[in-house]
Image (cartoon, rainbow, N blue to C red; front, side, top):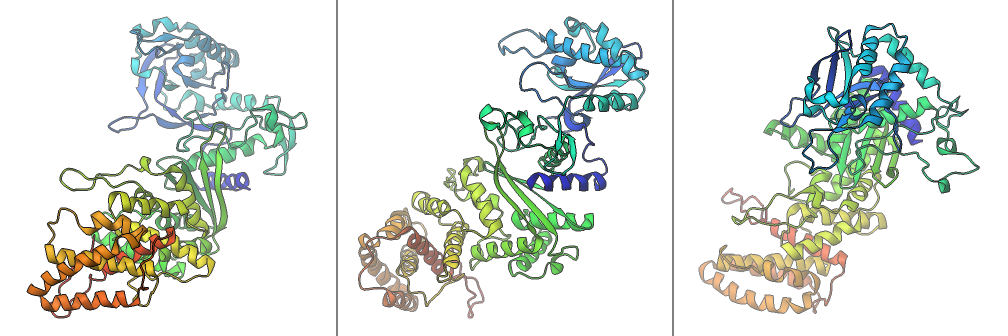
Length: 602
């Protein structure tokens, strides 16, 4: 099913992308340099094929597909690394002072293959290549026009005075097609197309999966006898035609490009997605909608932020897709594939084949589950931002938070978080455990962290048919953990009003961990200390003291007569939500002064 969907996507790309993907037998590879030859086979120039960046990188070129090198020497057709094309490469010993290292066996294999294929060629470029390979001496590298930068890079050939590369000429393509058909491939019914065709023994490599091997990995492979059956070897165990194998791997490699806007990498999981619709415009709109909903971008200006917030608000409320964009249709077919690297082949983390209406519903549930009042963000958090909150908060010497590195986030949670958002299943319980641990360890009880706690509990309770958690302060909630979280926020505020903001350590710094886990051991002491703070406030601001005492009494009146001895994980989460609600309830508009009284933590 996955391979079939990727093959269909390849057909869409071939018809709509204007050469963005290569045709059968070709592949997009990173080519660093172009060797320019004269008609007499002389090397006259070296042209870089690098990007214009601070650290230039090889550009992608359509070239004949590479050989799959598991062992032995296998030269590519009309392009390769310098060890094959020129017989030279970087020294394997990094301590060596030599400029280059000879690699004669690989060069001889490359030379013999191309001389035998093109000995009767009529094309000028192919003739020049044959002359070059016959006359080139790898030991003369230092005296040639070549620079050390070319070593170990992929190179192609070009005839001086022509814009096309040698491998693009009609005769080279004809010979290459003949090479593709000359393999001793067995014919069988292809599992993807259902047609009788030559079966691919080894499928092309897939590159770009985060954490995967740079040389590429496979989805389908049989590298041990224990994986084979009925005496069949390699690809015969799951027959896929050569053309279908090329199509699905080419489509997946296209999706996995870093510059592509259809790939998201988080932790050890790489997610790719695509849509199939009657019109290309509708498919593109569906893909843009998914990226915006799943991984909201960071706006660059105020107007963009307002537009994004409006779009996400419609999404969260489950408004019709046509209100977001006229090109969005609920029945548009949508495909989502989650991949993770493994030793021998790719692991399929999850696979979802659905429609856009279903995706919209899942996004709406996610944004509703994570929502809090007041919202602790200007734009809805991406999954990337959510994972960052699982990393311990550390501070600079000036008190500012240090920047977090996504590589420090628990990698295994990323895939489960993605799955939960896209399927509507429970969020990973590990998120709740991690966040509660962070509250106690670093004291950063931020709005986004509390929102994540709320989302985990909200979804679990909803799926179990239990009570829902309010987005804002719930005065009717009589859960002891929620009430004690509220009470703790009130006690913290009493301390602040009595002693000011310049306190070395607040009760949150000292007692939050104990109050949220073993309240019985700490609350009597906190309430006793608050009496002294209240008497101090009463001397200067009796009206304020009366208001706080009334707030304190309202919470104490609902609490049970005895403080709980221990809170479960769920109740520790409720505690943090009650604390946040009570603390941020002061973000209210004062009727008398028309000013914001900001008492919040963000």
